[in-house]
Structures are given as structure tokens and as C-alpha cells.
Amino acid sequence: MGYGEFLDGLEATGVVKGKIKTFLQADPDGKGSIQDQVTAEMASELMKVMGLKGNQSPQDVKRIRKMVEKQSR
Image (cartoon, rainbow, N blue to C red; front, side, top):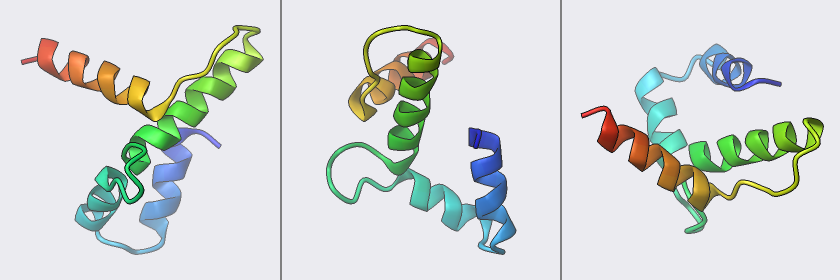
């Protein structure tokens, strides 16, 4: 399942988009937001399929996301 399909599935539940966004930004266990955890898992799987070594952690994703956000300002 791709990230877009994941989001479509959440929206199909009928939950308001604002609540979905709040859920995805939540960091319930201090390991990174739900969004960063999902993105890290997907990136790690993609790396494995491509034959690349290594993993992306939620912290890696957060760091990269913050850098991109900062550069786009």
C-alpha cells in the first residue's frame, strides 16, 4: 500500500481531514510522529526492494522533513 492509498483509506472512514492531520502529527510514544513512522517504514521497504542497505528511522524522516520545510521558506 502506498502513502496515498493509506491517506485515502483514512479519509474513507469519514473522519474529518483536520482530525486525520492531527492524528498523523501525533507522537504518542516519543518515537516520531505517526506520519514520520509510516514514511520511515515505507522508505526502508523501498530501499530493501532496491537492494540498498540501511533503514530510515522516524527521526531521520523528521530531520529531512524539517530541512526541506526550512529550505522552502
